Image (cartoon, rainbow, N blue to C red; front, top):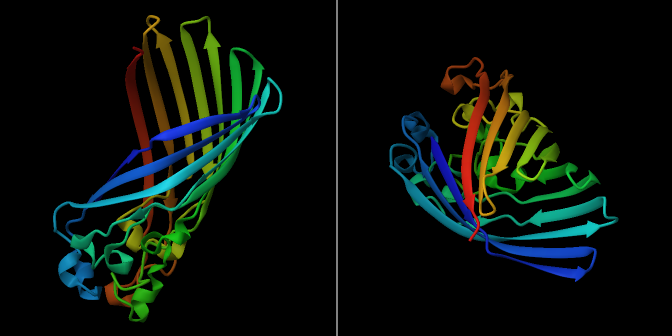
Length: 270
């Protein structure tokens, strides 16, 4: 499976008072998706010809994003954010795979944050975010209804069974002289995939819970900045429990994931 997403978010902001700022953005979203080699699920679909090996399909949609920042003092700031569910057009080529005839919306999120600036060079931030996977049938609905006769692709049909997730993040940024900025971060979230849902999530094993990041920026000149980053997603395994039904041979599906990501960017200020 391959799912790619692109967001373009034109935004505006207002300084309502000297210490309060509001922001709003329109999230314009594009997705493309491809699945191959999973035709075994065609026999359990409302549209067997729209499950696997159909090439890429495209999906488009929009939502809104709102935010607020309040500066309690020069050293303490708080913030809040809310993003609506992004309503997407259907993946018609995969109408037999995703619930509601190929619907694959992007879930709503909301959160709170706190930033402390002990000195002009040093910032510490912590935030909490909630991701409402249960609001998207294709992601949040459990697979169980498939085994009671509701086919894949049906209205409010089976999905990946992801739970809503709360995420806690901690980050810090330290400016050294005028040219260098060092950054580090850590995040931890609730496990989205229950042990009973591992079978279908072989296709989407998003089981990582803990991430650590590090990065730095170098101001090569007044107009140019070069940044590098590293992310490590700690390997996590979810062991299935009653996960594979007899119709698929029985037994358990265990899923595991760990990741490393490197980034390098260059910014030029005109």
